[in-house]
Image (cartoon, rainbow, N blue to C red; front, side, top):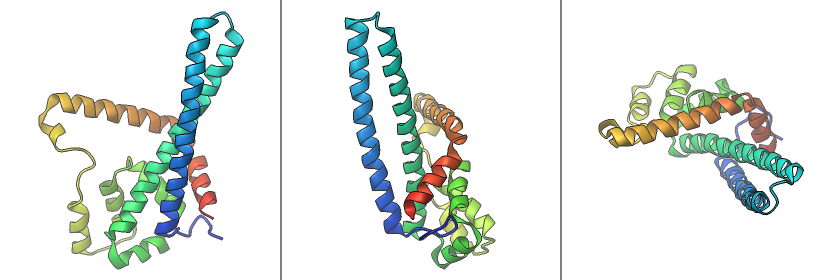
Length: 188
């Protein structure tokens, strides 16, 4: 049984991510069904405020669950990429020894789900002093498209997405411990 310091295997991460995606798809179907019922009720019986309020509460709860799953999946995608791409080569064992898995998940979130920033943080925390590894990290693509630097319309769309994501991250930052605990307990 794994504890919060042991790292799951790449297969375990992919399996967990797949499970979360399936769960998220099911929740999205449920959310869509509730929204359809809610719209029908609002048009056919707008005076049924108790039922409308109940459906709105269910909609809000499911939306929250979908966003938590989305964030969890994105966290796992970053970890999966870092492990699968073997950026740290043999130094990965040092990272596993120095940084508990739960802390790694927190580092991913603190670095805005950025692979490049997360890798730089891991490089520093593990006290790795290898110019080849540093170069690999510096050569990672930025986590945003380069076109946004030149096109102001794309920049605005990109900034809107960032603001939206940051808002959701802030909203669920308070639930991060719960999410990380869920990921870890499900990896056992």
